[in-house]
Amino acid sequence: MMQHRTVLIALLVFILLSSTILFAKLPGSPAPIFAQPDITPTASSPEASNTMTAHEQDDTPMGIVIPQAVNIRSGPRMYYDVIAHLEQNEQVPVMGVSPELEWLEIAFGSGWTGWVAAHMIDVSVPLEDLAVSAPTPLPTIMRLEGFTYIRQKLNNCSATALTIALTYFGGPEDQMIIGNYLRPVSTDVSVDIEQMATYANEVFAGVGAVWRMGGNWYLIRQLIAAGFPVVIETSVYVRGDQHPWAGHNRVIIGYDEQTILLYDSYLGHGNYQGYRIEQSELDETWKHMNRNFLVLYPEEREAEVAQIMGAHWDVAQSVGLAQRKALAEIVTNPNDVYAHYNLGTTYVAQGQYPEAMAAYDRALDVGGLPIRFHWYQFGIFEAYYHAGRYNELIWLAEYTMEMMGSALEAEEIHYWLGMGYAATGRLDEALAHVQRAVAMNPRFQPAQAALWQLQQGTYQPPV
Image (cartoon, rainbow, N blue to C red; front, side):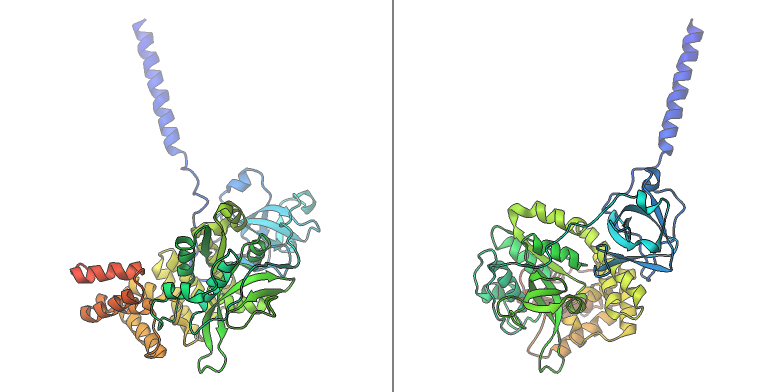
């Protein structure tokens, strides 16, 4: 009897040990949906994998890219934005087909979806067997009512655009209320879209705001159709200026089939019906600023905004989509300076500084950036700093300040120049510039932190 019991116990122990080993060999849980795509700094996609994906395992039809490259669009027509691209022999899950069987809805990246021309994809099942899919139809013509148009004062387009947008929610019509808050020093030439979002969230009661990069026109039209005003960060050509290119924020109040309607604090209001500009023309200026956009909404409707924005609601996914967009534009035009620069900015947002520098270096090699470009774009300074390229950081910051002249400045340039000086041991000069950054904008937290470190003697360079 004892012998049988001993054998039984030994058998149970063996089973338990075997189970432990079996479970230890099982693969871990899948990556979260917000994980970023594995993208190199060159304009190429990961090689196709022979490993079965979750979609293959759940019998989702798969498609293989036929030509050398295929654009992914935000909707099933050629006029929808290109949001990414696929390369030859890449495999993608096919989620559905348009009613006329001409466009496929596919999944790509970190759970994103988009549309590709059906004749570009070899699908594992007949198109007639796919589920019919179509994007949510939008009104052909839309214009939001209730804004007050305001003509901007000098270098005050950001504050004025935000003031115009907030009048939609009953906000005051005085641009200097926001202007004095965002630009306490009148020589400040640059207020970015993140500062505008922070103001709306922290100061204007009852209104929420989010900003993201890598927007597309279908998303913007969805937001407008739902009643949410949008501010976009673009460029503009200033009349009669020696260096006419400048950064500029505009309020979108509506659209029609091929046209966007703006309340533009510099260019006008279009007889209060909206300043009309072709979407394709506006997109070129929006691209200069990585297609950054700010959406404003009543706080109680936040869930609705999140649903419309989809993947763009999550910061990491928004960066990933902007990255895929830049890569697609580089495939189309390898000498697209703004696409290379935007790619670098997405890598900075991910903290991937070597990849960012590779993209920025390529942009500088291509050339053609406007003289004023780095009055508004600061990602390259951050990349230089964290890559240990301090002398290049100092040169670019000093050059940018020289181009501004004595009458204009930006706290971000003072800050990054101070960081470059600090990293190279020029501590007195570093302290002076960081102090100026704090004086220009006391709410600029990186400058406040750097000032404390310099004053306490605890500063250490990153490399």
